[in-house]
Image (tube, rainbow, N blue to C red; front, side, top):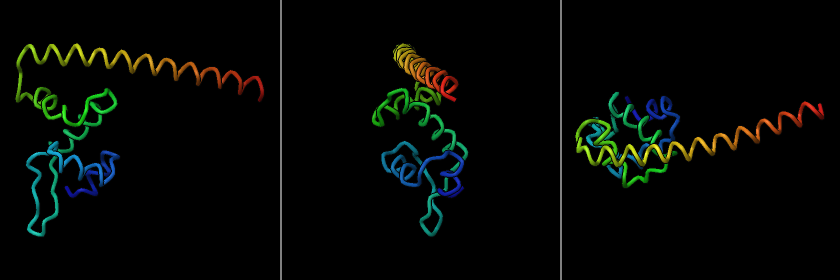
Length: 116
């Protein structure tokens, strides 16, 4: 698929996809004879995973190693255990942030009912 279709399917901007390609997060991206990028379903899946990793707090320079583990290219048990522990901590932080956001929404809804 061309970059526009990939952008539409993922909701990412063309600029973001190009950046991920340039920094090596989309290795092996093929090109047409005219030089246009052509992306595969595997690239699409990889982008979805990148989109999951970003809000968790993984930096772009960490992502290649994490992607290698998640995609089965690296499976050192110590590395997997470390990533799992770190990911749980990140998930817990996000859960606390979500709970705080839910509280704000609930309070605003209560105010809306009281004033409406």
